[in-house]
Image (cartoon, rainbow, N blue to C red):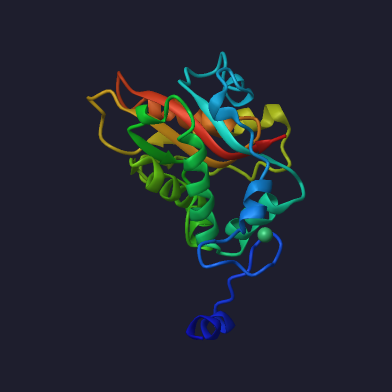
Length: 227
Ligand SMILES: [Zn+2]
């Protein structure tokens, strides 16, 4: 009875279909979770996410967990953590992404997760960096650290939404920098972002991560990529 009483104030409805969630389900019901368009990239060497970085940056591995479609459950979920302050949704999806990554042959190589930093003005407006929340959710299942301050933005970059492919590449060049001490060990850092389009942002972040020390290795992981 207490639970049904609490549900009046904290309704636990599936973000996908609106059905009431069971006590073991969070954010999405099992049925909607299974319908998320998983890429399977974590099990494929030379997958489409890795190919984006060929000839650009020595990326050890790259993957995106899901395909991003203009409509659908995943698009709604991404919208809710980007614009509706649903931090719990970002952490939930980070966890799902971490579970996918655990199916890869390389997840145990990762030393720490480095989220793509948000521009300070955007972070202030939103109240959080969604990539850092995704990384937090991932870290729970990958048993590694999150270095949320690993990278910083050095300059303002305009929103990329309406830019052409070439514009996007020049736009993000040199806008990230390593923000921690020089790394003497040989860590393998995983840069985390929400959506990968051209790969330009992750590429620029990887370049900055490689400035952290001589023996640093870098990989990239996005929640979603364009289908
Ligand atoms: Zn559902």
